[in-house]
Length: 391
Image (cartoon, rainbow, N blue to C red; front, side):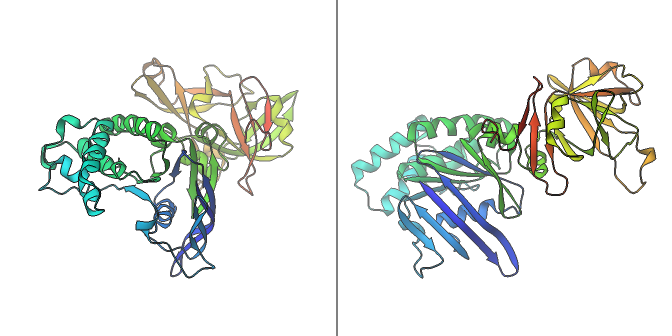
């Protein structure tokens, strides 16, 4: 188990981590997700012992390896940690077997044990047949698998990954994600993984910690991070290609609940009646593209948006929409809306067409605190942010 308690890290006047606390359970794969500068790599390096925190505490199982109340910091070599970096860092004059064995030789491991461990590690990453090749004879993906084999051959109790796939092309990344997941299941090693790639986090993680401005904005299972983001910032960062955040006011009229967007006060977007349970007037509505349905011929009192672009992306077509912002301040950038349409939308929709919107599920946020108030689903149920099924 890895325990981080109120961890802080400062570089002069710059605060990289602020009161970060998390627990990685034994055998768990926890992914640190966030944009550049969010603090995810700093947190990983603090756990590894490559950075000395400014405050807080780090425990590996029941052993304190850093505490602001102690002058002793356990050095990296004594933490039983294996790290896989962006850089492969392979020795060009050694073959694959020798590269994987090098760390074990430094530790003066018995020769028979070295051979057994290296062969087991190469078999695990599918490189047994390439054991005698030099790094220059390998592809980028194969070199990264050598780096992974080198790390797991030392049999660490904890595995730390610092964006190990970021230098590979997209197809290789997909293949290696699968292999990493398989290796983790076989080893059962407690793992901490840093990435800025949302898809990678969703695929690999048992738990995701989303970092924002040096703090953990949300710590949850991947499905919950995607479906119930704790803040609008988390919703935006976990989007692919992007998501919808609409600031507006809730109004009841003629037995209906309407959202009047800030960007177009003459547009009335219907919401499920259950959203009245939010008990607020001003909200930020969040809805993923797949949860927004276009209405081809909206009625006059439904409000409508302009089609800007219908863009096919493989089996999907994403339709980009805009409000009529002629009635709002000219210096206010209008909110763009994206929906996942039908394949034929790429040809049957034209720029300037008007469509209405129907929200199938979504989340409501307080615009002042930026915190999640509640969510609604396709069946018309409303869940508060304190509902156990949600959080």
